[in-house]
Amino acid sequence: MSIWEYANPVKFIRTTDRLLPWLSAGAVLCLVFGLVWGFFFTPDDFRQGSTVKIIYLHVPSALMAINAWLMMLVASLIWIVRRHHVSALAARAAAPIGATMTIIALATGAIWGQPMWGTWWAWDPRLTSFLILFLFYLGYMALWSAIDDDDTAADLTSILCLVGSVFALLSRYAVNFWNQGLHQGASLSLDKEENVADVFWYPLLVCIGGFVLLFIALVFLRTQTEIRARRSRALLARERAV
Image (cartoon, rainbow, N blue to C red; front, top):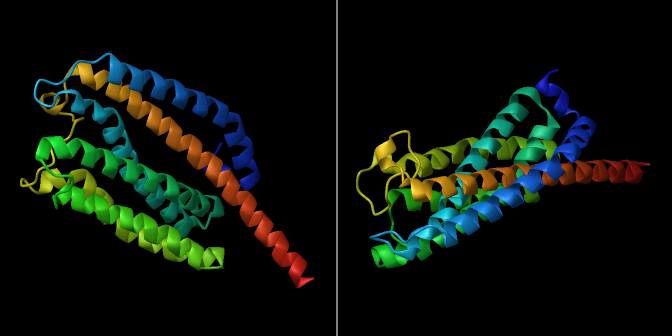
């Protein structure tokens, strides 16, 4: 079986229809369990107090905001190279989800940062690149909406996605490139000394799993919607031509 078989819209819809209930159930279970565990059954941090618990929303949403764009990059490259419409529509479907994750990350970061830094916002390298990434999300969605021809829109948004990927990577690795800035280091790292304490780390992993499953489920659902909308536009165009 080849992965390219799922470029067939009918096969994609049939397969994702079978997966969606499992993905949705897994997302709900992980999110409920992880958030309840994190917010109600973990201690306050000795320096940050109870505000540290916003980590269970901030870190997963920030992680998905960046990885949603990288998923769009992969889908856009597949469109450019293979011209598979499902990949282009999947990238389009992921954009509003990624933008929402970015808003959640920016909002929770501000709420977390105010008591820690004494300000809601700072022009920190990571925060700035993250804000620019959000603007790229808005531009990507606006470009799709502004162009009537789907193939032309897919071509132009794929190019925009390539450019925006620079800021997605900067959002992830800015603290490694620049030592200055208010933003703390990575909460999850291959270096065990940089990880948060285990008491916070385990429920955080569960929350991240929930966000990942939620993202996949929403992308599948929205891609199905985009496929059906494309079919409807094609049929309408045929009827008008007749």
